[in-house]
Length: 299
Image 1: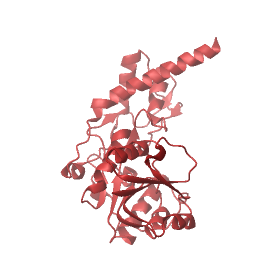
Image 2: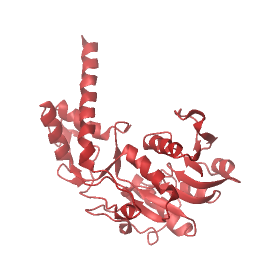
Image 3: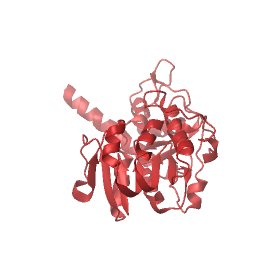
């Protein structure tokens, strides 16, 4: 099977491409060509500027792929630039649970309707992140209903390779007793592990499904539980204060993501609490190692 990955050289995109290669797929990566990757000659490469219509048209016109996985579409124009020129049997769009307004306990795919919401053709800077992601889905639902597409909705992806360092923020601030301003410390929230985020996308490549589909680890956890675990492991004490550093997950409601649709296809997600504490242990070690380096420099 011939698969085009738009993006895929960062974070869980790397896990995804490695899974595609392990599965024996013929993989082509489309990027700007500015970031190095570890795939070597195992993949083909084409180059394009994702946000420029003419560049996308020149790179993709006249090509055919069995499946296109678009990791870096953010807005309705991004969708349009690809969908108007690409010839493919299936298009998989990396969406987000941020399309839900709001997320809540047991959030299901039908909670966001890409047909009833107004479609606005926009670029990435037109609206806040959650709004441009909604517009990207609206473009699929309203402009390309005849195409075979999937919109995969993930909550926050976390892992040892998480370049955002959002979860690390809570670990480091707790261990160093740096004041944090947290507005949702007791709220239960969903997450997905970065490698599993890549695996599930690959799982969908040959599945007979269309439209939106959620992905998330089973179960939820609160920031309070995370902090208490770090405190217990390290003996540190977190300082939660309105005048502290704003925490990265602030503004998130209490929610969980329902993955029944994925499970009906035969995919079983991992249990969040089977692996998140191991990840926290890793971050604790990262902070300890950083402290050793800093102390060595000081002395």
